[in-house]
Amino acid sequence: DAGVTQSPTHLIKTRGQQVTLRCSPKSGHDTVSWYQQALGQGPQFIFQYYEEEERQRGNFPDRFSGHQFPNYSSELNVNALLLGDSALYLCASSFSEYGYTFGSGTRLTVV
Amino acid sequence: KQEVTQIPAALSVPEGENLVLNCSFTDSAIYNLQWFRQDPGKGLTSLLLIQSSQREQTSGRLNASLDKSSGRSTLYIAASQPGDSATYLCAVHTGANSKLTFGKGITLSVRP
Image (cartoon, rainbow over all chains, first blue to last red; front, side, top):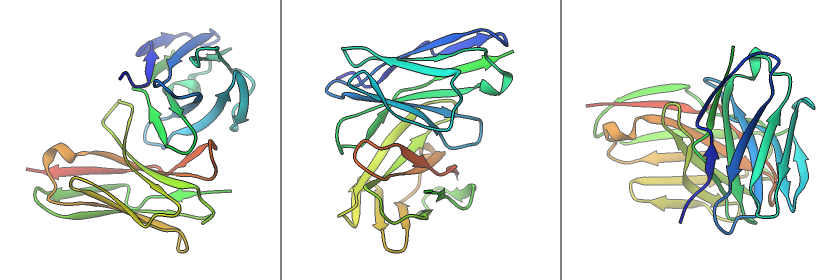
C-alpha cells in the first residue's frame, strides 16, 4: 500500500517565480494537510483540505494557496517566491482520528 | 494557543543505553499525541500515536507515555542503537482532523 507521495522531491526557483507542489494521499485517507519546515524547526501548519474545501489555515500569507481534487490529491501553490520560502514542504494525509501519515517532502530552494 | 516544547534540542548517548525523550504541551485539552522520527532532509515517519484516553503505547523497543493533566509525554527507547540516530518530533492534535502542533524536535546521536 503506497503511503503519501509527493512530487517533485527537489526544486530550485528564482525569487518572484511561482511554484506548484503535488501530493497524493495514502489510500483511504480523505484529508490532506500541508506543512512548511524550515531548517532546525518543527513543521508549521499551512492549511488543510477536506472534500475539496480549505477547512483550516495557518498563519501564512495569501501567496500560499491550494487545491484538492475529487480523488483527494492536492496541490500547494506559492506565488511571488521569497528567499524565506526556502524550506521542506511536507504533505500529510489522514482519516478521522487515526493519525497523520507524512510524505517524504519537497525541498524548495529559492535563489 | 497550544505550544509544544522538547528539551534538550540535542542528545548524544553511547550505544546500548536506555533513554527518555521528553515533550511538554501547554493546553491539556488534546485529542491525541503522535511521535515522529525524521532522518536528515527526509519526511516524517510515525512512530507511535497515543489517543487522549490512553496512558501509553508500545512498539518494539519504543514506549510512549502520556500524562494529559501535567501536559507531558515521554518517548522511551530501550537499548539504543546507532540506527536510532535521527530527530524525534512530538506533535499534539487538538481535535478530530485539526492541525498538528509540533515541537522543534530532539536530535539524537547514538555513538557506536
